[in-house]
Length: 259
Image 1: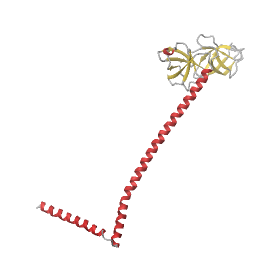
Image 2: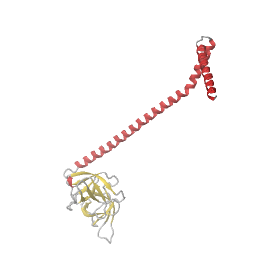
Image 3: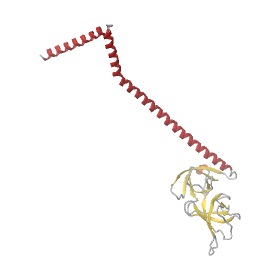
Image 4: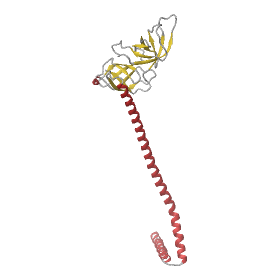
């Protein structure tokens, strides 16, 4: 019984659809004014219904374009950053080359600092040259500003450098117009003192301190420090001379090992 009822409903629906379909065909095949008005309204209705889809599609296109532009801008920024870093490295290498040429009588081996303790008082660092580069123990190390330290332990491809800021470091130096001899010793950070400067020696603030050449390790005339304070006391046979180290420990990049 139910099957017959469903069959009857399906027949009615099919008949209705066919009737509407053929009615529309007959209606729109007519050229009357009323039919044309209905057709125009139908077209407008279809256009209105379809407009959100078009708007959404345009938004998606704009979104894709913005994503593509953002990607290109990011790539350009990375490229600019790479070029800037290359320029900095090239300028640094040019500066190093000019510095190396100023010490033509010395054999300088450039090295990169690859490890240090990043503390305010740096006592040792690791450089990326070693025995394979003919580096030996107790070779002096300089940067572009002055004496940096000396090698104390050598591996095949790396060397440990004792820096001039190490409290166990000491070097014979000369200072002033008369090249007065003294011993440089570090105190804290970038600062140190000159021991053994006789009271009669004429030492002024701003005088540069150089290696004396007396040591078997350090050649003469390597810049070491600048005098920042001089004090003479009656009860002391020597002057108190405070100095500031010239080597740059804030930007540890390149150093030169004197072979």
